[in-house]
Each structure stands twice: as C-alpha cells, then as structure tokens.
Image (cartoon, rainbow, N blue to C red):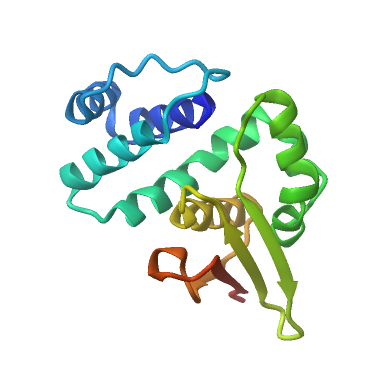
Length: 179
C-alpha cells in the first residue's frame, strides 16, 4: 500500500479526533507510523490501523473504511484538483477512475496496486460498479463514492450486491442517485 493512503488516513483521524488520536491509533496497532507518500508499506499495516480504530470506536472494520474513504475525498480534491474539475459530477468522476485517475496514480506513485473497476450503466439511471482487488477493501470504495457525491453536491445511495468477502469473484456496488 502506498504511503499516500496512510497520510490521508492520518489527516482524516487528526481532523476529526485530534492530534493525539493518530498517535494513540499507532500505539494500539503497534506501528511506528513514519509514512512517506511515495513509500510502499505492507497492506497488513493499514489493516492493523483499521482493526485498532474498529476496536476503539466499536465500529466494524467496514464502517471504518467507509468513514475513511468519505473523509479522504476533500483532501484528495485539494491535492489533485484536476481529477475533480473536468468530470463535473459524480457519475463522470466515477467513470474516469480506470481511464484517467488510476493511470495518473501509477505515474505519481510507482508500483501502486490500484483496484480495477468495471462499469455498467442501467436504463434506470443506476450505475453498477464491479470492484476487484486482492485487498478486498470494497468498503473503502463505498466511502470514496459517498465522499465524491458530497464533493459534487449530489446524494447517492450505495448498496452492495455480491461481495468478495462472501465468496463472489468481485464486488458489485450499485449507485443510485437520490433526488
């Protein structure tokens, strides 16, 4: 996992819970926490931080990942405004992940292991997003979707039809726009 993800998590934790909370989380996860944005770190470290936050806040790891994804979008929009300017709305933003955002991520962060998404637009207006990643962090993707919707001033409902955690080959995230 690239250090930029750890940096985003630290920023989200500090913004919501205060400076000492990040240090407390690192202590609970038994990690040093010296993450540089371009560095690469074991996936187990992000999962240890999620587990420690889950225990401390009495929330599921999935809830922690959703919170993190949603909380990280403002920082991402600040750091990478070009990713958010041209799409104009959450649908176009989501559809740009594989073709615009992840190729740029791979240029900026050599060796980044980005998840792969497949998109199916339904005549009902729903967007089905197939999520595939060995990390199985579909809840983080859900949080990113919610955060992107908030960024664009839209309201969406994300449901999970089929999940890698339940034995499916990939997750199916269904995005519906709430009017």
